[in-house]
Image 1 (cartoon, rainbow, N blue to C red):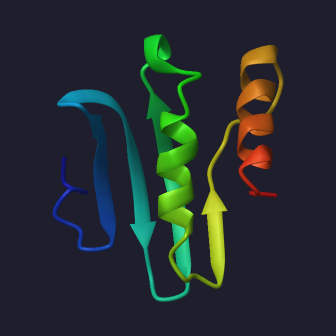
Image 2: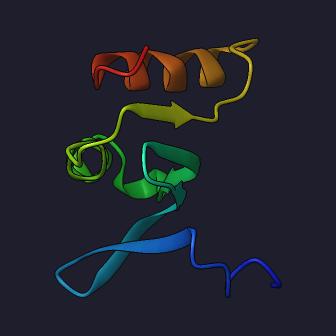
Length: 90
């Protein structure tokens, strides 16, 4: 857990109605937002929690938004990539 004290790294719990629905780990620099990990509880997917959280995060004013994602080699990873594309991330 040596990374948690880093001032550039943020761990954001996604909570609604006192229920944890997911989390985002991201790094923040003056012109760059780097989203390292983004997860929504599988039982709660499809309820727009991820869409809303991602929209709020990228709404900030950055020159570059970088999202780390696995290669789209199977149906699950392809679905994730399509989700990010629908959110306006290239």
